[in-house]
Amino acid sequence: MELISPGEYAKQKVQSVQDYVLLAARSVANLFRAPRYLADTMQQADMIGVGSLPIVLAACFFTGAALALNSATTLGRFGALTLIGQLVSIGIVRELGPVLAGLVVAGRNASGMASELGSMVVTEQIDAMRALGTDPTKKLVTPRVISTVIMMFFLTILGDFLGLIGGWVVSTIVMGLDSRQYWSNAWQALEYSDVFMGLTKPLVFGFIIATIGCYYGLSTKGGTQGVGRSTTEAVVAAMILIIAVDVFVTRLLMMILGS
Amino acid sequence: MSAPPTLVERSAVAERPPAREAVVFENVSIAFEENRVLNGISFQLPRGETKAIFGVAGSGKSTILKLAIGLIRPDSGRIYTLGEEVTALKEEELFELRRRVGIVFQESALFDSLTVRENVGFRLYEEGGTPDSEIEERIREVLRFVELEHTLDMFPAELSGGMRRRVAIARAIITRPEVLLYDSPTGGLDPVTSTTIVELIIKQRDVYKTSSLLVTHRLQDAFVMATHYFDQRENKMKLLPRGQRGEVPLSFLILRDGKPIFDGDAQELAHTRDEYIREYIS
Image (cartoon, rainbow over all chains, first blue to last red; front, side):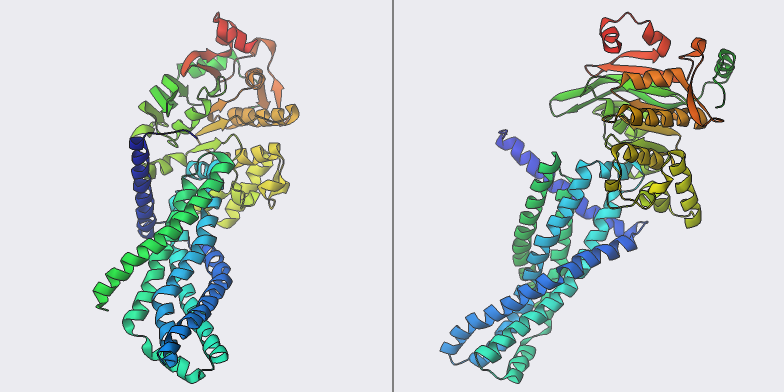
């Protein structure tokens, strides 16, 4: 591997951030410019949304169940086992649902986007598209961004629900709690700010997943080995960004919502 | 073109006002990292002419084609394609220009998730405004031109290398572009398939008078182009009579160390005294 100076390394990183920001901005600007690729957007929505549904549901269900199991130990010590529904509900809806759905969709789709677009780059299909007078950011990036943002929203709602069901299964079957009590606690614990926060995050995460996946795909260099590298980097970058951005979005929304 | 062009016809053409050039390179340089690929290259492609570009691997032949339509930007110099200054246009503006230019990539660059029909009709589907029935007709017409009408519903992965190149040619010519750029269209193909591709290029040159830049390693392809014409009546290329060989709108550009060392027609090439070129063409 070729060694480069720290100055050159820093320059490359700044250049990468600049290119990413430009791509992300163009993907949004394309929303207001024709042509709009509705069919491509629907196709991507199907691949991202329907394709990711089983794993998002499974991940959220088991996390909800595990959360109930873990919190039961602590709550039991204080004789507050009945509050398990409240804890699972707030934990899943505010935080775990969006983050888990984000991480699962990033693992599945940021890699898919990076490898698909990366393969198109190394086989000159992206150049061919540009040569044929079509803007790849309009045709390939914007549909992926729109569909990922929309699908993340709905996947999170379904994921949250499955997380609550996971908590309910553990609470009733393992802990022997009353089913009505669990759902009543879970429902009443939720405030507007919790739901708002829980449904704003997936929109941000969806945007990160799609733009990172497309950015790494379109900046692929070095043949099939480069495609593999882009795929790995896209998943790592998307996951790290989701976790890091989650902190800032949470803090920002807490300030806005006063919660 | 049903008969070989005569010298009389060529002189009559020469008396017309000079046509604007299809492509002009003015002192163009480009480097990839530390490697200077083109070093102040200048040449012109007159309208209706085919220019074959030669040079050893890595001499910047394919780079010239990508520069001509702004897929990459030079470090310095100016490039004009169809009268537009490519080097001064933004990416958005270049899309308009690129619609008037066709390009055949080295490895065909067909969209592997689309069928042959969707690949060939890609530009028409994207532009919109053309009824589907007309698009279908145009697709069939160009696929007939490259003799691949039966592959309409096949995917690129199901085609042989030669068939993929022909589909790429069909995709490039469907909008009847004013300039065609061929990047090693016969590279890696067997002699029979190569001849079929060269015949298609000659057909495009002689039937539609399209200006072309042809990048190739194969000198024999250029010599076939210099010595043959396309006979529309018999629908095949034929050898020009002995006295008229080289009397076709074809010129040669040979690159060495990022600079052109020869830019002229077949007769000038045959009579060059440059040792490197003589060795190259021998």
